[in-house]
Image (spheres, helix red, strand yellow):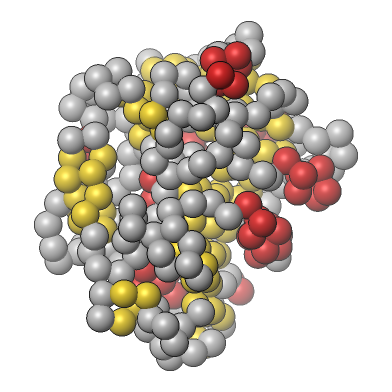
Length: 310
């Protein structure tokens, strides 16, 4: 396995492509101080960018931000998701990994749950869970990071991958924050949820009530490359996490969805009294479509920072 910096990996191309459409974001490319790296995993070159603030803590937290489906040839690692100012303020290291590139459709996608069929050009399909586990392990050592404060956020298909991280890498990750991406998408109903996570993990989910790209309530269709899937609902995701974390107290008894639509009587929910003092929270973003609202990042960071591993 090799890890090495690239030479400003496609930086000029990324800047020129800032107006390219993204399924999952309207974010624009950023310029350095991100430093671009590559890593070989299962004989595939993987890309990631790292932002280390000048005020970095001696044993800093690590925050991994997973992009949504990206329509462009350069790796989507220098997108501006608005976390740099928070890294400057709180001293954490920000890492933005890239998913796997499909040369047929010029898209980058994560292999979230039931996404294997979206990678017909690869056999076996990409092991993104294994890649992220190794990347987390490498960077904990490289930056002398606090192993109790490893966090993963994601948007759209990146949120769906963050959900998978919460299940499969929760022995390393303290909290995940999926934005506009439920836990499962699969070819047919009924929805089959994953098995138990490897460890208790705090989860804060966000979803816009006006999202028509990744419908939150009605098992909406999702197309990843040529693979057609049906989405789990936000109730499926929230209930999975509160049950798996053995949470005993709910803020309210309102369902998140009602008659296939966001419940107008619900602003979200909060589950506490969970194993290892983890917390499961869902937040509706009123009248927000399929977009990452950067002004909410402060609340997201506050949630993560409040939930280190015990």
